Amino acid sequence: MSEEQYKSGSRLEQVLTSGNFALTGELGPPKSADRETVEKKANLLKDSVDAANITDNQTAIVRMSSWGAGLIAKECGLEPVMQITTRDRNRLAIQSDVIGAAAMGIKNILCISGDHHSFGNHPTSRIVHDIDSVQLIATLKKMRDEKKFESGDEIRNTKKSELIEPRIFIGAAANPFADPMEFRVVRLAKKINAGADFIQTQVIYDMERFKKWMDEVRDQGLHEKTYILAGITPLKSAKMAQYMKENVSGIAIPDHVVERLSEAEDQKAEGINIAVEQMQELKNMEGISGVHLMAIGAEKSVPGIAEQAGFLPRPTQYEKIS
Amino acid sequence: MIIAEQKPFKEIYESVKDSEKLLVLGCGTCVTVCMAGGEKEVGVLANQIRLAAGKDGGKIEVTEHTITRQCDEEFFDEGASEKIKEADSVLSLGCGVGVQHIVQLYPDVVVRPGVNTQFYGATLQQGIWTERCAGCGECVLERFEGICPIARCSKSLMNGPCGGSSNGMCEVDPENTECAWQLIYDRMKRLNKLDKLMDYQPPKDWSHDRDGGPRSVSREDVLF
Ligand code: SF4
Ligand code: SF4
Image (cartoon, rainbow over all chains, first blue to last red; front, side):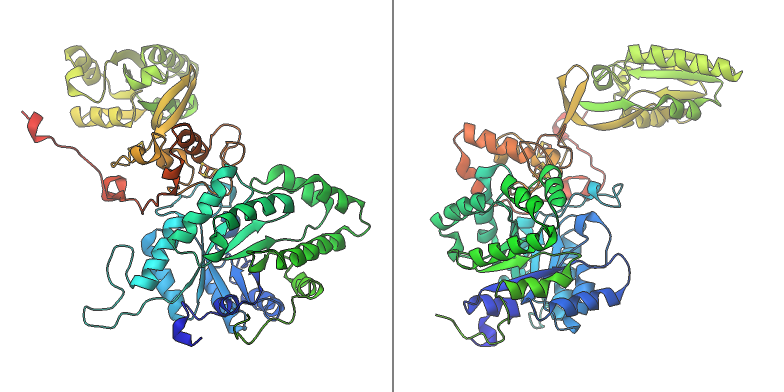
């Protein structure tokens, strides 16, 4: 495929469209203007993943902006997936960030609503949600494909000048484990219809429930309309698993997983073993196009996990795999 | 109706303790129903202020009065007007509208708010009121079969639930707040309209909300 035939030409898009099984990572920006930490994490990740999500004020705590950190990552040779939440910025701010990021060479954007700010470090701030995540997806698609802003204005400097739209590979999140259960596939379909080129799922611990969700996804043929990357995060200990099970809504951890961890001699290693087994299983699952490995604060472990799962080396040529 | 909650007594007292002639003015409509600023609350609060002032050795002369609605000029009759003009300060237990309306009608009187005005809500049971409408200025309840995601979803999501909806409750306050999207889902199911959930809801026009600046309504047909 030539450069022009791609929606964005990002590495992630090329890996996926060529039929390679993708691996994306995650990079959590620091809580300061500390450039070095971003560089360190980017260097750890760059040869192990095709691209990495740069989170946007994750858990509603102020951090280096996703596009600032994304640019640093890019300079280090790690392709960024810039996350945008609808929590902090209205449609004006978001669209200006998008064209700014595109001008700087950022090619993947993931659209999410974001954690509620009452959980973060500025709980007294005002919440925005001018648009929601589905509307954000549709806005990006309109910007890219129709070359128009959400308002309908054309993306050009003057009436006579050239249209210069952001070329973006559009991502969205899906949570197969939250309620209402029956709404989850509907919500995925809405995101795909709005223009999601790829989907990253919430972390999977309950593989059985995930498979059921995928059955429904395949029944509706949704896996053929987008690329689905399955979310994986290694558990660090039985205690962490138990805590998450009880306290984090939208995350399902079955008892047998907690038991397996608590019986292990080295719980951390066992957590990685579980993740590796899951990655291998997902690689063979119909309709799954890649894994999204989220090891925030444990970027160090990513190359090892990718290696152990047999995901390395990452592709550098994107000839169509038949 | 408008739901309000009485401010902490300490805050109220701080704001009125320097006055000499204080009128505690209640409102007989919304704040009476939600038990924040009706005749009964006026009586209790006036006594509390007298007691506190007595302890301080100060002397505030406290009078009480309640009118049907502080947001309508017609209810400020001669009796109310006289009491307001005699006082140097008015402690209004009406909502924020009431406070400002008194200021507008009696420009020389100092007015203090006695309640925190909260939201447009309904009485769930005696003692529990809950938000139902955010006054967005362009009602879209038809699209959601009568359950408002703007006012009742913590993130005002218009195209479905976030990933935090769990057992029917909202992640932001799982003890007390229902997930609006669970409610919308259940309602669509009940009405056999689940396919309506697939409709894409475009970005809302917030210009009818406060985002368009302070709002007013004028109706030619009923103007005098
Ligand atoms: S859509 Fe607007 S006007 Fe209608 S209930 Fe919701 S907030 Fe109120
Ligand atoms: S849990 Fe439900 S009500 Fe709460 S923010 Fe998410 S969708 Fe909205």
